[in-house]
Length: 392
Image 1: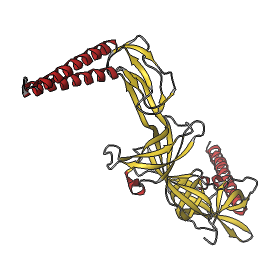
Image 2: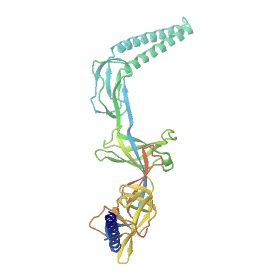
Image 3: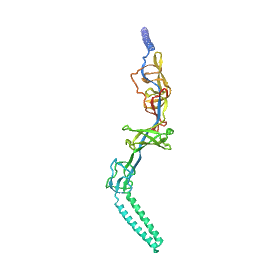
Image 4: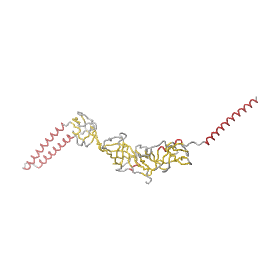
């Protein structure tokens, strides 16, 4: 019995030892293989870093407002006798648009004019009697006062009569009629809108940090989400206070709209142009790797007959479409990786693959994130243009 137990223990020890030796041998062989293995170079696309001309600006969201636009309202109540316009008619200043029944006012005007004639006759008679020595000066003064009172009554009735005829206060485009012939209307009823579409205002807001960059007369450009509408304008007003709730400043600009492509209330993208900056370093946004440790870019360096990459941590600035400004970390003349970074590590070997070409840098609005993201309505921007010439 004891002999069998000993044999079993010996066999078990041999089996365990064999397993341990096999695992150790396998790990050693794997380590030896990996130590002698040289990974192939990673194919990447690269781009040379060059300084560009950067046109800063301020991007914002705006609303179109007509330079002259009103709701046309009824001045005096009554029955609508005539509606002399249709939707989208172009009207001129003084053109009659609406006629309210004025028979009562015309009758009152006739009575007031008749009363004025009587008082004028009595005034002349009083003056004649006074000249003959029969009348008194007091009677003349009373007659003249009655004449003035009758004239005032006539003017009052004429005003009421004029209120029954509604005309256009300025040239523009009239909107949809809101009343019909035969309808009884009350004072204050809006019967249409009138908009002057030749000249438009654009109202927008910018963060308070950008107040110093704004001034009257500065050029702006606006665009819409439909019909590829674009127009130029100038800042005409800056609100002299900051909204304490949003920390935004209200700005108004005038935009020419002679082609009629802009309408009041329309959503607009506004860009305020700022002076150009020379020698700004920009890279494609695909070249930037963001992680918990910061933003970095792989810079291609020569190593013997091949190439390797060095991971450089950078400080980023403003954005311009697919370009982004690099404030620190790389310099002009560096060759950076623009794609293929997902398989790279620091000091990895690379090979340049020119079969995939990224679009070159183009002039486009560049945005600097606003200091207060909570506003969500405006941000500072810039433009990346072609690389600056060496002489510049």
